[in-house]
Every structure is written in C-alpha cells, then in structure tokens.
Image (cartoon, rainbow, N blue to C red; front, side, top):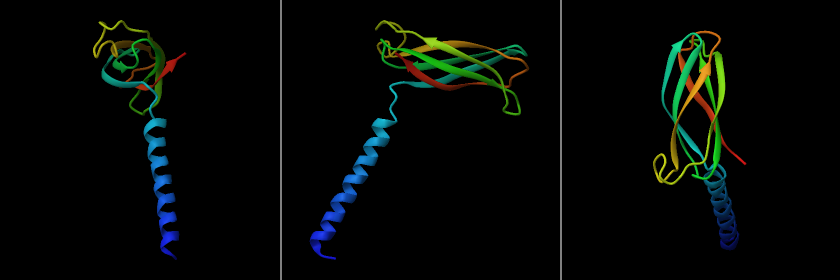
Length: 121
C-alpha cells in the first residue's frame, strides 16, 4: 500500500471516528436529566418518589415513575409533570426542580424508581 493510500485510509478512519463520537455525545443529549433522591413505601397502596429534574427552566417535562415488588414486578405506575420554572425557583437558576410523585400500588412495593423523563412540546 502506498503512503498516499495509507494517508487517505487514516483520514477516512479519523473522520468516521469523529463522526461517531459526536453522534454519541450530541445525539444522546435529550436536554433533560433526572436523579432519584429518595422513595418511601407508605403501605400496600402507596409509594412516593422524590426526584430532581434538570432541564431548561422554560420547558415542561414528564417523568414516568414505577413501583416494584421484591420480584421486580411493576405494582404501580404514574407519570408526573414538571412545569416551567422561574429563574429564582429550584436551583441552578431554575434549571433543577425537586418533585414528589405519588404512585398508587396494587400490592406492597419494595422500591420506587424513575423509568424515564422527556420534554413535552
């Protein structure tokens, strides 16, 4: 293989690698992140989940919460809405909001988790 062919192959491989890295970094950024702070299993009919949601202060988000039993079966599900914030609400100039979601359960749960959060148009 000539030097020129090796150089072309190296440049193409570098461009493909850079494209892949940018796709992973930018394509995976949904503009929202969530972090579970705590959960509380009140009884066999109710579990609460406290979470911190970070997003653009003017955006509205929804988060799917679920409660699971000791066999990892879902025993309750709820979607909570996180509305827009003022700059002085929450933390990080309104970017992070703490939310408590209630999940009605049909049997005793052992944990409450955040399944996913997404931005609403």
